[in-house]
Amino acid sequence: MRSLLDSFSEGDILVADRYYCSFMMIALLGQRKVDVCVRLHQSREIDFRRGQRLGPDDHLITWTKPARPAWMDEETYATIPDSLTLREIRYCIVEPGRRVQVLTVVTTLLDADTYSRQDIAQLYGFRWNSELDIRSIKQALNLVHLRCKSPEMVRREFWATLLGYNLIRTTTAAAAVLHHKQPREISFTSTCQYVLASWSLLSADQFPATQILPRCRTMLAQIAQCEVANRPGRIEPREIKRRRHRYKLMQEPRATLRARLKPN
Image (cartoon, rainbow, N blue to C red; front, top):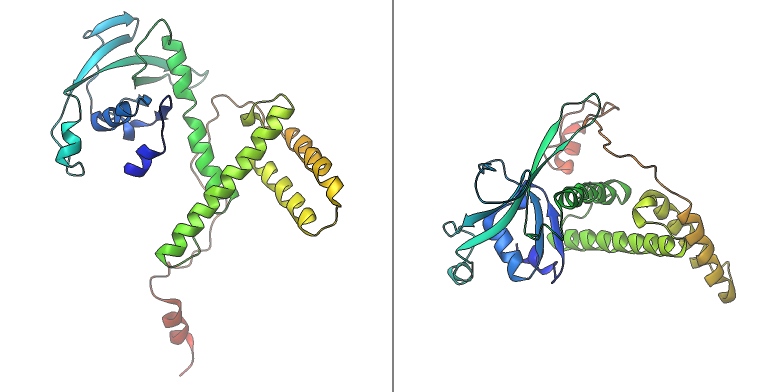
């Protein structure tokens, strides 16, 4: 919890799923002047007849302070306010040929004149980018399976991968700025491939020092050309196309299994 809070600073906005829709989480972020836009947790009751009405399916509500959770100390609990005034909106996602999906979002952006209901709905739609980023880290950077064994080395492998991810994203942003595009319009996987290819050439001292900067500019131009298609409302099944081998799971040390296979 502490590491999550430390990753935000004043003026940031947390756009997240239902897991972060809790009184304590919103209050702790509010102490850091961080706004929140999260989907309403399924255990909370929805009633747009109550509260201060701001518009259709848009009103202000008040949450009261719950009992102290086990993970929070009494000193921190004493700093939590007794109530929170939040804004609750509801909107529908309509796609031809599919059932209408109704979403209810809670946010600390209370000013309806500055942030309309449509603005809040569009802001929450950006949450899907976090799912894509996690997929990029796990699949493109091969973090789906950690190879180290000791806890210390696992932490190093994890943070080294995140460092590489940030460097790739920074390179993508530089290519987008130079060529007047949005960073999300450029393929992350293609950027990885261009960076690895250029790194291999530059590390082999195949270019003199005077050609390194032009080479980097050429690389950024090539990266900017790797655009991803506009795919609004994309839906993919969570199913595996390729069947894995039907071997049993390894539940014993490899040395023990090898010894068992050796002839007596």
